[in-house]
Length: 349
Image: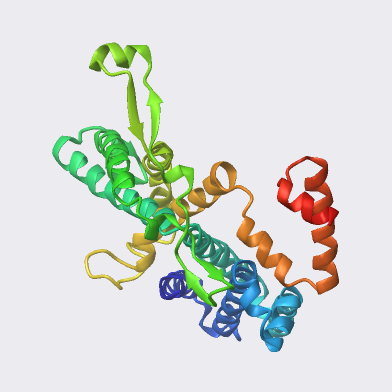
């Protein structure tokens, strides 16, 4: 949250200075108000999604969860109306510039910060590995570029070279393949879940198949080369290659985008928060892009039906609704012949 707020502050401050928005009424107040509104919406969605069973125990929270989206929309509308009321004839165009600036900043910073939180709830490993491979790529691309760099890569960043780009790619893939094997412990791979029986949050689970070693048959060419038919790997190691490939090939474009942005407004860094490095946003430009890709990757290729979430949703239903679902499910299982014989015997009795 603190990183998100600082990144937002850095970008808003740039707009404030570049467009000389010193006389705009309510500009900064409204910018921070919209930040609060959007965070309220996203964090409320997360709480309702992951901790619904816990929240339903408290009546005031039940109201907030049930009408969360309406409350969020009402808060946003209040800010929207305040903006319209703040319009001043001589500043119309500038005020709309800054209104758009604020919303684009919210999209870039807050939305992607929310995706980082979503990744965390899937398991710490989905947070640690993406962050570490981006850092690794930055370091290795710099080292390869420093020692071997000869060919410029892109005009936006004259110091970037093809040698650094390619060297960073291969180094990052190897790094991710090794690291992803070393942190497949339960604490890192299990999602954070609320256990209604023990009334506590837990990071305990039967590790998914993704984090259990499996045997893979090697292609004939590789087999003839190394004299080995099979290899034992964690499936996550294979997925880590996809993540590291994105971090190396596409991730740097987040940095190029930030470079173009800074050149457009004739600034060297987003801020001077970190001596020698610039602002927080200077360090997180690629990280935000990587977090978004990780979220999309999980949703597309990893995440399946979650029995725990289904159970949480069932627990907040009314008793008659729970009973109706139970009877429907029992009939469905009986028709498919899935019910154990002991259960069928009990039903006949």
